[in-house]
Image (cartoon, rainbow, N blue to C red; front, side):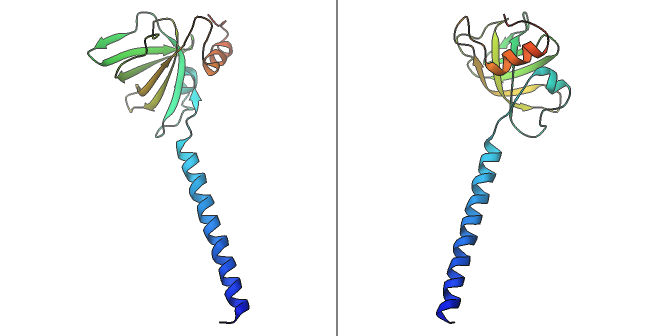
Length: 142
């Protein structure tokens, strides 16, 4: 192998290694992205079936059912309702009628199985995605 061929082989190896590293980084970022959907979008089947995503809106009044650490409640954007199942401790500010964002997956039975539940942190705050979904639904932010 001549010195010129050796240099070309090294450059091609570096380019191939950079391309492989870039592909791995892009794949990792794509698999870790979590998108937000409203209950109306979930009902319209716009949410991914096999991937984790976030759903948000208001906790429907009278919908919270507790059984030990398992909690069932309904998230609504005032147009559609989505049943949610969560196992674990809920945030202290979790209340019926208040804003919530849950992250998880949609089960085959149509229930959203949450791995994480986030509640609003004061009287004037609502997650921006939830506020936008409520506005699109034609309602004012509470």
